[in-house]
Image (cartoon, rainbow, N blue to C red):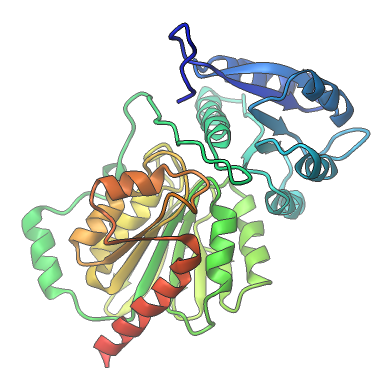
Length: 378
């Protein structure tokens, strides 16, 4: 949460909105203004107006569109990051064709990407509101250019857990399943949120093409996950793709859950595939790390490794604990290397992580686990 002022009230996170559409500026202002922890500092129709606003007052967070008049958002982002870094959330309606530009924005220093609010139905507006407000808080509390800010706690209405997608096993059934679980090829499961795109790039770039199958949930809007997968596929040794229902999890392949859908691990004999399913938000997210981790605990158990990386909130903490209880090897990213130490912190506090490591040690931890697991098979 923001620091308390001397009067005892919380200091609100001040947001600058940069978008050429008056209706989008108004909708975003209404959404952000409805959250007690947020307020709109100013709005701007183009980067030049935004610069004048920033000269008057530096915002805590800037929501920035990519397609803008007089100067495109990506160019403006790069200028801001080189001259006066500000936590930036890209808010865009770009479809598949423009999603590569959004990946460039993340690489240029943007903290997160959200789609412009949908107001066609009450449900979509509610989902947009939740995602936008969460992104603003995460960005404001992100570790930025070496400055550490503690992750806020989300004080919200009751939220659904993984039970909404996958029924939990009873203790007796879980114990029986662990005893009967056959030894298979190892599976690596990774969950991440704010700051995760660059964290995943660092981890995956360091892994050899022979690495066992990896499944990933990265909180990201639909369509953008495909661009993210394609971008990673071009720089990593492993094959990386957006997961499709029925895809086989196999050595040398990384499957990234598609935005707005849940991904579950499924086992048939010694073979693993993924199921891509619809369903409600779990732990405030779709796809949810908790859903993926629970499915891995039930399908793979001792044959799996679970890793939770940077992100706000607690998605994945409960699921990682279930993985550890099922015999999986579990790892959490440490505070120092996390952009937002929310998800890893929750997992560590629950006793879900067998080991806590810096981001630059995660790939080595995977390689060590794989050698041990493959040695046990032989």
